[in-house]
Image (cartoon, rainbow, N blue to C red; front, side, top):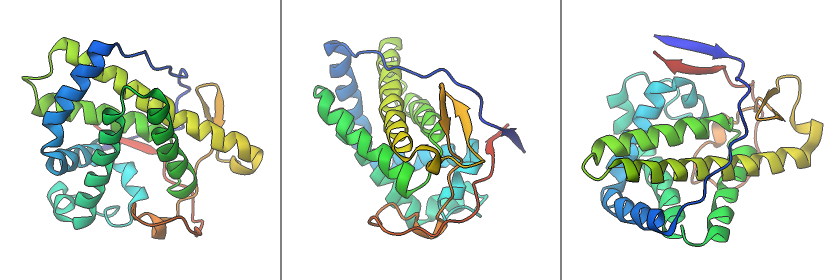
Length: 222
C-alpha cells in the first residue's frame, strides 16, 4: 500500500562534507569490490528504489505499469539502466581525488535529468539513500561505521552537485521553467516537470520532447 506525500516538503539546502584522503581511499577500496558485480548490484538497487518509491517508475515507459519486482528484474531495459547508473557512480569514485572532474560529471548528470529526462531532483536524494542501503547490506563485512560515514559523505556529494546543476538550469530558464505546478524546497522554486515518456531510454541522444501531463505526486510505499 502506498502513501501519497503530496507536495514536496521544504528541505534544507544540503552541502556536502569534504572527504579526507583516508576516506577517499576507503571509498575506492570498497567500491572496487562492489563494482566487480556491478550489474547485479545495480539491479538490486533499482528494484528496491522502485519498490520503495513506485512513483519513480513514471519516468520509465518500460517499467511504469509493472508491479512485480521479479518482472522488472527480467527486463533488459532495467539491467541496461543498472549498468549505466553503476558506470556513472564508478566514474565519480574513480575521480574522487579530482574535485573538478567529479563536479563536471555530476553536472552533466544533473542537467541531463533536468532537461532531457524531466526527473524531479528529490529522486536523487531517494536513490542515493537506497543505493547506500543496498550496498551496506550486501557488503556488510566491509561496511564498518567508518566506511558508512565516508559513503554518507559521497551520497551528500552526489546530491549536492546534481541539485546544483538543476538550480543552474532552472535559474537560466527563469519563470519559463516553473509554471503553476512548481514547488519550493531548499530555498528555491522548482518545477513539476512535464514527462516525455517516449524519450526515457537512457541511452537515447538529445532530441525533442513531447510534453505530456505533469508527473504524479511522489509516493513512498509503507
